[in-house]
Image (cartoon, rainbow, N blue to C red; front, side):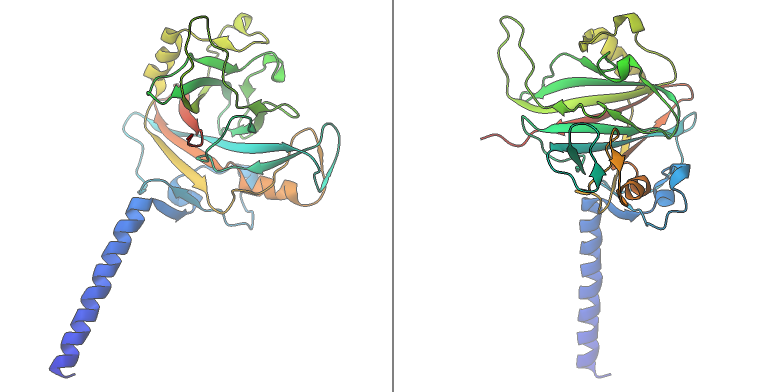
Length: 293
């Protein structure tokens, strides 16, 4: 190798190393991709083990698996947001009103009038609660509404079994994005999101006598008390290459292979938190609105 060739080789090597360093920094900024369940520390539904379909996750932040802090253990909640459309559906036999459902990116933007349904899965049994708050452009929040349970959804039954996913609200009902009714003298603010707080508690948190057809408005102290006790850092894992896929709606008869595909995929987003034994699991899901002119 001549001196000139040696210098050229050195320059190319330096450029390659520098390029790799830049690539690593870009990847770190973009988060982590291609994580298998065991690499992410995600517990998989035993009914889905052994499936030939390879499932991988991505995270919005760089991820390195670590043990849970002392005195805590990892718990998780799986959530899929389905976009629900009414109309012609292929591969199903109609039992009630015809619907098609499609997986959404949990971080997708929404607009007024969109109709959705949640599918929630937990590896542990307990009582499920969902609290909704409007978030405004000035950073403030509206009142905390207990949108589940109500007597209109599952007749108020908010128990959740281990690894048995439930749809909220159940077929054929949907949730529709719409501004809440204002109290007398209250001015309308620009809304930026609906923020859902999902809680799975080993014991009941609300007296069943308080549950009616209407959504229960929680006192600030009650809701903030739950958050103060159980809110902690959340690790979010999103399924790769699953957004946009059609799913199975409970209440209709499945024909074809869609049911198997749904069982193989599992929740679109898995939230993992470190909790103390006996504590409730609390995760926050902000459903952000599209930017308004």
